[in-house]
Image 1 (cartoon, rainbow, N blue to C red):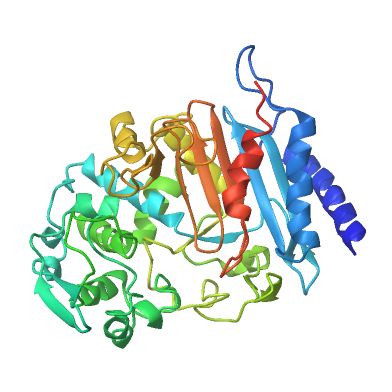
Image 2: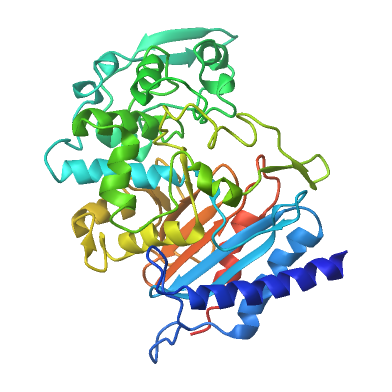
Length: 433
């Protein structure tokens, strides 16, 4: 079985490379010529890139992963693009480079760009109180655990701002903490929403969910701590109120449409449903099992109500599409002739805005991205690199100093593998000049 799988991976790699070269002029795709770095610029060796093939293949051989798509660009040109394993193992459907994935928190960066595009038009101020757009946030509360048990619900010491939401310092979690979980579950959030972040099955507008969230206590005072949660979903409602349009329309007209991201959607068109990868879960022994339907597995991204557009975790995309978005950021807000943001807005996104609140040893957080502030803080990232990941096990990193954009997409929820943490290292080890 192991040899058969490796043979299949090798054949697929050859086929995908052939298809990529043949389709290099297709609208919405990245060009696929061989990368020829200028003298003195970073370069990759074929021998070391082949290590990534073997490394990815091992996860499939050992049944710890059904399949993956990996894409690495250097100065905008692919130096590595592979589809390995299976999009649907039981149906024997091979993974392909155009397979569509649930990218979960990759959505956060795109929603943050939508916010900043409205900042540039004067419709949103970075330090505006959120209550300017969602009055329910004028007076929020915080749940404080008492010694010996119990919870005190106290008023927030100040209003939450757009800046707090962009940097995840609003005190808003996903409602899974023991002292608030029951309250969140009672209102259809936290444990009632799968792992907390899932809303694709909700038959209500985005802002209705976000307004209900405001009635719940948060877990930290605004500005006092970095905490991961519904902040970017709240921003999705802020975008809708400021733009006067639903979030999916704003994203499509301002970002994905202009960038040619033809396979990036909140809900998948029926005609593309055969390209959606299946979700698997890491079992108790580390091998995969097919995930169930519903919030903790396949989700309602094809047959759902199509009313809730989660700014924090709702999008589906392909490796090439998401790489186009990242290349726009790497180029200071523009891709080719298409400008989405001004360079200084991008700088706000990609530089640390919160000091040591996120981590004290060299990682910061900007307006939508985790930032690498010193060499060694995140794999082999150069200072100035940035990125994040998604709940289904995916990861992306951009390293402007090296001219690198990396995307690894998988569908594993929960994910007990180390594939996400090792992927950047496997890319950097192949970079020898």
